[in-house]
Length: 366
Image 1: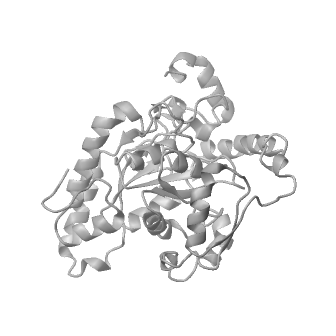
Image 2: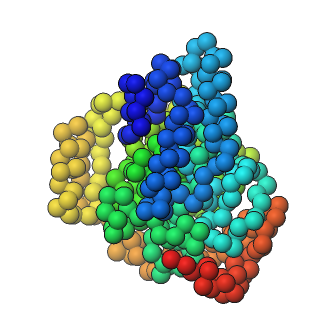
């Protein structure tokens, strides 16, 4: 879609913000475009589980607020910008939050997730829920990355037969395919970084506690983190600045929020940002030669084939004990989350397993 002088395809947050300010684009036009793209491409890519029926209303409200503001640059960076949320992130609206599972259809959350509250305060438009590996890939370790009973099999937009990775598959696919410019994913063990890499977009996995996990379907409170998936590093940092901070409903944010730099992270987006940095590379692979040389040209010191004691054990989640720990934490964390819902067909992991066994054909559809 084109306006007179602006192309929405591949547009960054900065591009969108400038087009808003120069009245070449409205938030409603942007939402209309993304909804049209989703209707065309989602039957192929299966990146979006559902769209928000109130997205256009939110966009129109943002447009009115912009019209009333004398200096639009004072508005938050995400004002009027649509965003997709991984279907682990709760919204207290007409959208469902199901972790991709049919067992959670009809459940009612108590409140917006902490990160959603911050997005709304930033003026973002909640466009919908992105697909994922069901239960953050904890439905079964044998299911393909990007599959869920609700979302079906997510597809890499560049090579449809390629692994999209997960579990934040839909968040990455959507950005790569221009179904949205901004999305949020979650990560316990690679679930932002892997799909971002596989779909050629940018993901940031924040340190645990920088972003609130309150209202997010959990795996492990030790490792879960919510982070942005966007088209550029700059966009990802803008979103990160919007969602970090203390949340009384997530104890981990109390300590972590003390380390958020005054003025946010965007101040560090400089052309000379790599100068003087020391970076270690654990693995040796021919594909890494070009990016390593690029890092060096930009002033970084790169230590190749970095030696780490017991790396084989660390990278094997069975030998390291991570598998056992995460399975135990998933059970405890999920039971607590389900019990806290206002309404839910299932109240424990045992209930979810019983549902999948009772409705095996429907819950395993492809």
